[in-house]
Image (cartoon, rainbow, N blue to C red; front, side, top):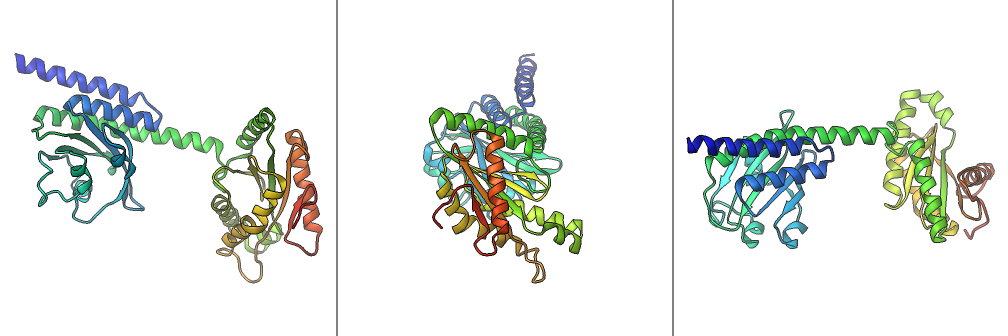
Amino acid sequence: MMTLTSENKSLLDVLQGARTVVSQLDLDKTLGAILKSAMEITGTCAGSIALYNEKSSSLRIRAARGFSKNFIARREWKVRRGGLTDRILKSRSIIVLDDITNPSFFTNALPVQNDIKSLVCVPLICSHEVAGILYVDDFTLREFLPDDLHALEILASFASIAIANARTHASVKQQAITDSLTGLFNRRCFETILSREFRRAERHGREFSLALVDVNDFKKFNDSYGHQAGDRALASLGEAVRNAVRSTDVAARYGGDEIVIILPETKLQKAYNLFANRIKHEIEDGFRLISDQDHELSVTIGIASYPRDGKNAEELILSADRAMLAAKKMKFGCNIGCARPVAA
């Protein structure tokens, strides 16, 4: 009777933990809830969850508890053929290591250096693919009870569902703010971000710039090669822009073949220099993969800055548009126009 009660209590703990896990839609909160429940089930004082990237054949820690900063700093690693991670990915089954201090069996130095002596590795499987690995660790040699291991496997099943749900939720949220063709923010999201940037710049007395990027003779390219080629060109434009802009910049598809870029805390002269010296060239380099000698794609750019060229969204975008149209009319130059004269 005591054994039955103990088993029922263990199962109840797992189900309560699973209920917490599946109720989360934010991926990081989901992973944190999974890890917390797993450590409570096993009574361990450390643990982590690493998600698997099949393309790069690597794992990256997304949740961790009880470890040193040195351990967390090395959060990403490649899967080594024949190593422990490779074994877990191939077997797709739980692996228990009661003693990792035996160098002939366990060759990863980092856990040993952090005084980890035993651990359990549980694959998290979503849609028949390994999404990641749950690790629970202890700093003492110990045997893990069969009931605890069984409970971990049950938790892992719920955890896999929760991860899939969280990823789907994140994907839907991303689709709501992203242009499907270019992968950049859509116009509605851009307008929200621009409004926020105006408020921030006004509050702190800062300048910022806005750039309109237009593909030259895009209609001719579409007419010559077809709409599918045009779509590929726009996709290439989006990727090139993402790679070229700074991490602090915000790029969005404004309409048709026009891209708009917000450059926070960037004066007009600096914005011009960024485009003239690097960004424009990198965007056009991205086009070369889908262009040919008969029709090499290029861009014209118009730049304006707050507050001198516009004190609201309509004024600032109009100033950038006028600068872009003026640059298109120039027979010579680098096809970059500014709302005001700047030093070339």
